[in-house]
Image (spheres, rainbow, N blue to C red):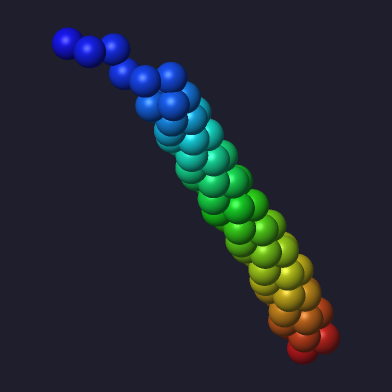
Length: 73
């Protein structure tokens, strides 16, 4: 079999390098996407905690008012 020309060897090398770089970029994109999703989930969890805290606070206030009303009777 004939040895590929120098030009062809350089082209193959360049293609392999480009393919490798593309795979790295795709890998980084996947990681960034996962990080964004994680950040969204963390924010949602934070919001849920705030809602729960506010609900508990309002519930406690309602119970306090009811208890005070019972004491007045």
